[in-house]
Length: 479
Length: 73
Image (tube, rainbow over all chains, first blue to last red; front, side, top):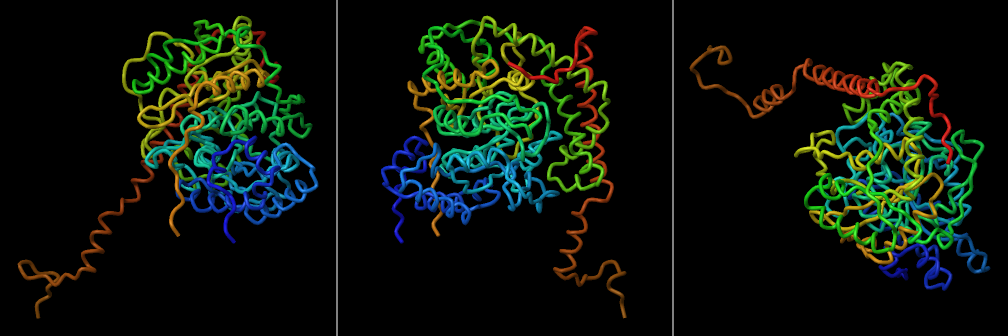
């Protein structure tokens, strides 16, 4: 049977696909089949695919078509998506990207998978990830059961992690959106490196039931999409309280960017040093243009610095304490040695030596950090910073290599990723240009539970730029 | 009969299979090498923990400060 689905669907937004499905330009089954073909053919070329779920997906797509015929609509009906392999899908392997868990199967799907199913989205595959979401600290991008995540813009570059497959699959048009998770940078980094829009929700807004735990007090689940608008549509479906998740804030979320405050009422905090000195030289022109574009939305800009804390050390200490406890059985069984990355193995083993007093001290300092950020957000509504200081590194390079050049005198907003995660703050990464022919991005970070405000400003920024519409020249291999 | 294997200054009858075995044997690191690398990784991981501790020890922490177990807006 000839494929009735045109090629432009692979990079279409959720709203565009929804309109075309409801207009019966193509069916959900045809759309799902086309995406499954593409994911299965292209995904392995970039080490993005953990498991195809074609059969289940086609069955659900048929149900979606039946509902569309009866004009019974759901918010993400018939939209194909992928999920990081840290999320349980009932009776299917959930590997957490790690060899010791290669045969693991759960009986119940993760809460977010259930919510998306209820919302009509079609799960077409589980996506590759850094083993154990990077717990223990990995040295090389190859720290994964499926190999290093290869960037669809340049296969010699890394995709970013730990939601590597989520970044790749979304950027390469293998899914319309994907789910990732973040403990410290695992949504924002692959979003920035692959050139997609990624949302890290406020801690506790999205249930983690059925997700691998790396850190009880840091883990978040969020979407990687084509735009801020799509992030809002997905968050609308996956957010909400869950008594089964002890970290749940018990809050709901409705995507209403139209009710967010007007740009003229917002003060955006930023540090010029982030854009002019911390950023690598080749990225500075597009970062400067992004800064100008945000200014042109009408927001008030205010130069600031982050409070002075060793954010990375605080976060690592908390993460080591919680991760060591979570993975103690793996470490003590010796199966930890089956992991791919030697540095990660050593990091996991060492985490068992962390004294409780140090973990608690870090958690107490975290209270001070949160207080300082509450004070910071009295005068500032949103923080603006480069998502990463430059584009993705080469896939063979060590991730803990020293950076060249003198360190700037001012702190600026450097350390925003660990700081934002320590405070459970929401953030959105928006593509903002290219450096060395690779995508770069800015991040907007807000007060807890101000996702609508971030999405509204992100949407406005994306109405004035087209970086989020660029996509890599990925083609299907000839069979 | 000359034992060619033990004799010097004689043409040796070495097959390509023998050469491959010798090369492969030379390429395999001794048992101490992986252990040394693992020890180095362990030292590096422990040093990272110690470095974190040194950094957070510098922070003046009021006695009344409780751990951040709540994450509210």
